[in-house]
Each structure stands twice: as C-alpha cells, then as structure tokens.
Image (cartoon, rainbow, N blue to C red; front, side, top):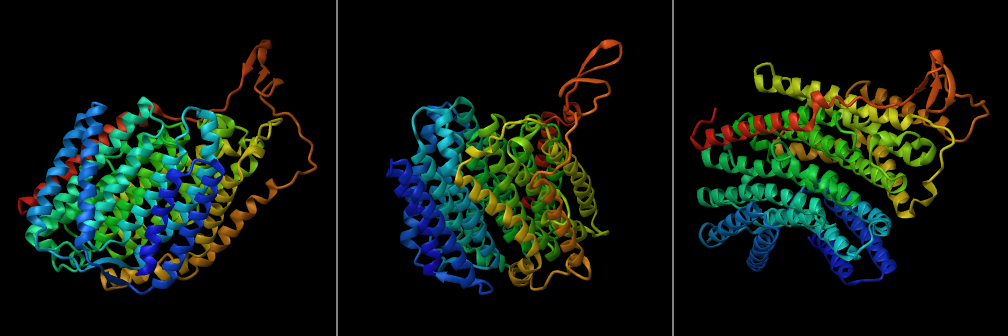
Length: 637
C-alpha cells in the first residue's frame, strides 16, 4: 500500500513546489525530475501488483472529513466565480451539488463505513501506466512548449499556476482509478473537473473563460448524477464501496441499484465528452496544447471510460447497457462525420477523440467479455497515439504559425521529422496493423448478436463511422505527404524536451503494437476473468492473424526508409497542364494564366458541426432520459 500512497503523493508534492518556484530553469528541472519520479513509481506499482488484485484497509473518518471540508470550500468558490463572471447556470448547479453534498454527509452517509479505501487490479494498473507514463511525458513536453508559449503570448508569467494544475491533476487521476471508497472517487473526480476548468481558462481571454465555464457546467451535471447515485446506494443498499457494488448479484432486478449504476454511467458519459455533452471538449481546444493532450485525450476523458469499463459487468443486457451503447455508437458515427468538415487540426483531433471514446463507451455498454476486452485495448492505443498527435500539432503551430491542415503543405520539407511522426500517429489511428484498427475489428465481432436489434444498429454505426474515419484521416495524411520544393527548414528551433517526448511516444506506438498479445495476456484477460468470471472468446489473436499483422507492421515501417537521406534523382518541375509560370500557376490555352491550389474537400453543407451536433444532442439526450425514466418507473426488460 505504501507504493500506492507514494505514487499519489509525488505529483501533489511536485505541484506544490512548482507553485512557489519562480526561476524558469529551476522550474523546468523540478518538473522533469518530478515526471521521472512519477514514471518510476507507476512502473514500480505495476510490477508489484500485476496479477495480484488487492484492497487496502485505511481509516476513512479523518480522510472523509478532510475531503468534505475541501468539497464545501470548492463549492463556495464555484458559486463565487459564477457570480463574478455572470455564469448563473454554474452558480445554480454548484449550489445544487453543495446542498446534495450536505444532505449526503449528514443524512444518507451516516453509519456507513468503507473499510477498504483503496484497491488495485489489472485495469487500475493499465490506467496507472497511462497516467504515470503518458501524463508525465506530457508535463515534460510542457516545459519547452510553455517557454515558447510565454514568448509568443507575452503578458504576466503564470506558468507556475499552469504546472501546479497539471501535476495536481495527475495526483487526482491516480485517486480516481485507485479508490474503492466511492466517496473518495467522487472527490477526486471533482478535482479533475476543477483542474480542467482552470486549465481551459488559463489564458483568461473571453473565449477561454466562456469555454471553461461550459466545461464546468456540463461536468457539474455529471457530478450531480454521480452524487445522486451515491445517495441512492447509501439509502437503498447501504453500499459505498465499489468492490461491493460490483459484487451485487442480479443488478438488473434491483430497480434502484440499477438506477444508481445508470447515474454513475451518466457521469462517465459526461466525463468522456459523449453527446449530448461533447461540446465541453471542443471548447477546451483553446487551452495550451499540453492541456489538450493531458486532460482531453490521454487522461481526464479516460476517467469516464474507466468508470464505464468498471461498471460493464453490471450493464450487460439491461436498460443501463442499452443507454450506454446507444450513446456511444451514435457519438462514434456522428462525431466522425463532424470531423470531415473541420480544417482546424485540433478540432479534427477533438472530434476524433469524442468519436473513439464513443466506441469505447459502446463496448462497455455491450458488456460482454469480448467487447470489454476490445474497449480496454482501444483505451490504451488511443491514449498513446492521440496524445502524440496533439503534441505534434502544438509543435507545428509554434513553428509554422498555424494549426490549419491546409497550411501543412510542404511540412515534409519544413519539419521532416515532425511530419513523419505525425504521419505515424495518423496511420496508427486507422490503418492496419496498428492496435486501433485491430481493436475495432475485435469490437465489431463482439457486437454480433442476431437476437438483439440494438447491437445490429450498433454494428451499422461502427461500420459507417469507421469508413468516415478513413476519409478525414486520409485527407490530412495526403497534405502531410505533399512535398514542395525550396522550403525553409524550421525544425532546428524545436526544443529538446519536445523531441524527447515525441520520439518516446512514437516508439511506444510501435512497441505497444508489437506487444499487443503480451498486453492482452498479462493485463487485460486476467482482469476480465476476475470481473466476469470467464475469459473472452477471442479470434483476432488466433491462427495466422498475428503473423500477418507483424508482417504488415514491418512493411509499414519500411515505407518510411526512402524519406531518409537524399537521392541522386534529378528534380524537374511539376506538369500543370500548360507552360509553368511558377509552382502555383501555369499558362493555359489562349495565353490565360491559371492559378493552381491543392485543397481538401470538407463538405460543410453536409457534415457541418452545427447540423451534426444538433442531431446527436437531440437523439442521445432522448435515449438517456427514456432509459433512466424507464428504470425509475420500474420497467426493466
């Protein structure tokens, strides 16, 4: 247990130190050493407890009292900030949550003790490694990135506050994935919400403040749902332990237990930025790039899918499962469609994140061992690949002055290593033999159930959504592959910390793909056996499939070799259907000058985000309301 407490304490201690250190070089060194310590401690915890699920007895009275006091203070701060910025919805929701917290503490929680405050199993270990390794690497990247950010933006240097929030967030995320006491989990859950709120509003521009409050309002809805679930569990079953909740037999026949599970699932849906709550993640893209990578692709949104994957054994073949799989499947399809219309690289990544999280949510809603196996592995691959892509876009933006995909023509000449890293990340998102595509394959095969029309609809959503995914990734990949002569190389000014992190993540993309069977055998399957009592019936890792995937991976790596070094071939001008004037125009028939531009097709009229977003918000909100209302009224097919 000491290893767990140390791992949770290290980022908090580092955060407090960084809050008071003003010297830039000292701050960078402390952040890098702290990140290394977090990585070492998370790996140590993983090796210590892999295959050994355990719970740990901790006296909860003092901890509960401290957490409750902090919750009250934070609730008052939320109401104050809402009044200050005239965001009265945030005030109202903050007040509701504050009243519910008081009622829960003094009425419903009375007499209920949770002996085992912490726990760890193989799913927690996977999350610990994602948070500890990827989260820490992003903090290292932020050291160099925020120096450039401060130079570009100017104004008061608030980087101490930025790094404080980043490391506090890591500590809170460890708390979310290691808490067996649901009250503790709720506390850490809300801390991640407030860290995200502060980081999104970091620049204090009007847009940043508005988007930070949008995130806060929507996640307060999720927090209220979580708190309502705790009240129901305490009142109806006397349960505030995650271990006891997951051991509840026949949850489908226990009306109020199922209602509580569905409310917790709703909290996970909000945190995962699923429709109709997805707009908070889109607004979060105004934050500095490390914030996008840490909170909104690799860790915070993973808290939501972690919750849903943990609850998945209780969601199989009931109204809760139907709600979750419907929201996830529709979000995957519609968010993928909305991504087609985006030319801003960060918004493409945001919609792609929402879509892929939707696929993981759908896997949790189906609730079979095979679907959950695919969902866990999707979580791992998405965390690594998407964080790398966010960081690549941040580096490109600082050095070419734009995050618009149309401005990435010639990136291979201007920033060749970065372009290749970005191409690797894009390929890993949708091409074989990388893990994202393999896991989608496994998800599709696990959804097949001819007797269940909901899963057949889900298969259609995944199939069409995957096709759309290929469309928008291919557009971006084509822009990066475009070579324009006589471009200035601006890559020399990229800071060392950025290169170290980007190359580490690129190596992890390949290594995790190569280690796919080991990851499955050592961590995922043992957890599924513990959670469901049976092993998943897998087909993707059987027979010759793995040999074929390894051959494809080797071939894909070889594709990049011709881009290293310079050949002896003679360079000739492009033929543009006439007499070339320069690289962007030619003389056509009748002596007319024709300008040439290469631009992607965005289909805003068909797939504009306002149209797609409205459809998704209406349909998913209807599904959530109908399913929860049905259970509350006692209709549980």
